[in-house]
Image (cartoon, rainbow, N blue to C red; front, side, top):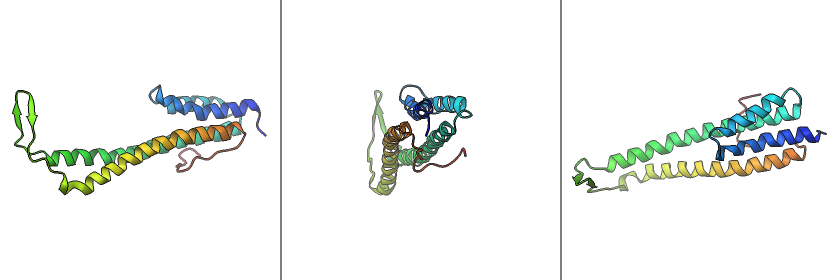
Length: 151
């Protein structure tokens, strides 16, 4: 059974990832600070700190992969369909013959990648809350879809 202080520290390690909504890279900085200062004092805090950092790094990797898929698809699709005979009149651009029907497969793949990205961000929020609740009860929580970068 873990002490209340250890459980609270581990819970705050999970909750500190929510600072990403207010501070850029807060989801990496604060968990690392809490974990590195307390990892030698408690095996419970060490375990949860590793889980949090591994989960955040895994989400970063998944997000980058989805962005690398979606962004080029949208850029290629748009530029492929813009004719080079666009008319420019008084700072207005008039595009003729804009046609996406030959790129519907690419557009679908890009939309799916973008939707997966947003679903990943929503799932992240709820998994963090769930992990915090489990940790505050003294249970060890292992995030799903996590690559164990730190063992």
